[in-house]
Image 1 (cartoon, rainbow, N blue to C red):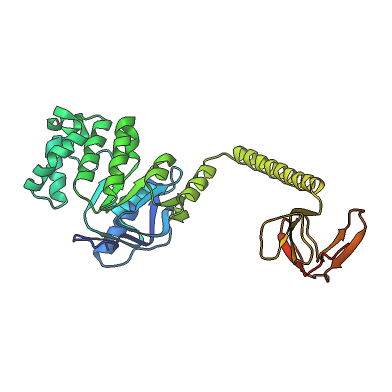
Image 2: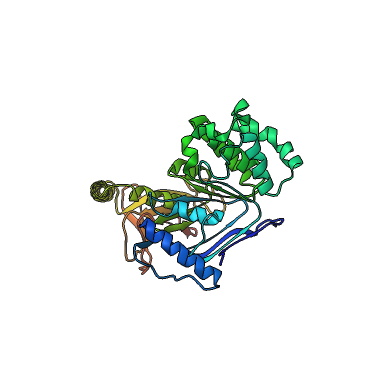
Length: 385
């Protein structure tokens, strides 16, 4: 039974183009056993029986219980160490192999570049292979004619377009394959690490093209280059031994975990040791900063003190008799207190205390660096003498 469904139709904006539901795939380490298991599975399918999901001798899970969904405008980066299951998952998405469990649904045209020779007949020319690929995707000869000039210009292989593909270098095959895949208006574009064989200029050109076409399709991109993942991907799926280690739209976190996995045990231990030392040093510096601030600052610091006539905000130092005076004080706490009271006193020219006032205790905790202010109005306080 084919667990991959492909639907060819016009795709509404926002609809899921790729849906992967609990997909798993077994592979076998022994070639002879693999061929025998393949015959058994094929026979069961022909008889309408389901495949066994349990592992048999020499088998292992290349992909295990993977699920995700992708919409138009999204680019998924498939990352992981060699043998993580990236290429196996990509081949299932392209229909080259079938999942042993789960379901894959793909909507619309699928353009793919997952192997250097995939989709090419080596004895045919590049031109002939271009028209064959177009026909497979449902394009007429006239439609391919309209796109052919753009494909040839992007591939930059010149007169070699009329040479057999078997005579192409790996870089030329990638150029033509990518040009065909991205110019045939795919709804879904699958790209494996094959771009790594191209020269730097062509890789940058491909990345720019991927950004452009992602607006009208969704892209699944396998690469070991974290710069590419960071630059073009909206989502990331990090695989380890066939299982999902990290998935979602937090691309930075996926890259961070991937970089950490790529380190040796010795390198990880060294980084952890350095992190502990840095954290200890930062804590000591913070504690020193707090101690220095406490030493440099009084527990309570006066910010401003203003005297002015009531109704006149101008700050003055001399007052006439028989007027109302307003005192406004702003201050801050440089340490934590469980409560506080406000008070002041006034002295004459001989520094004799002539007036003292104090509030009740405010049983309210104040925090470090909290600012407060209070105002007092003296009614007709300045009398003769």
